[in-house]
Length: 110
Image 1 (tube, helix red, strand yellow):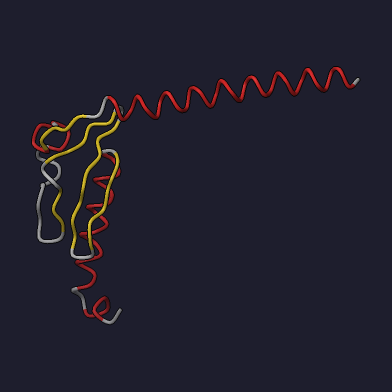
Image 2: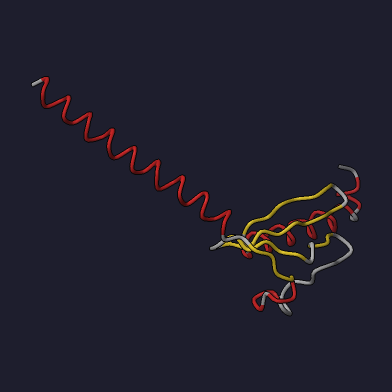
């Protein structure tokens, strides 16, 4: 029975080694393939999200790290890094809502 457990552990060790190698490869591949583009070049955002409002400003240079875009969003509370268009839309909406709530009588008390 000990032989079976040892063989099983060796098999698992081999699988974990392969998974670790794949993870390292993907990590370095994402850094190697990253490039920058202009915010205006992203068609999915044209007419949907302005680059700058009174509440936030998205850096005009966007990092492309497949399969995602990385955005730098600056607010009065400081800079934020956002990964993906979906998360950018969410963060910008939340910033706008928080700022507008802060302008209300109830929000001004917080």
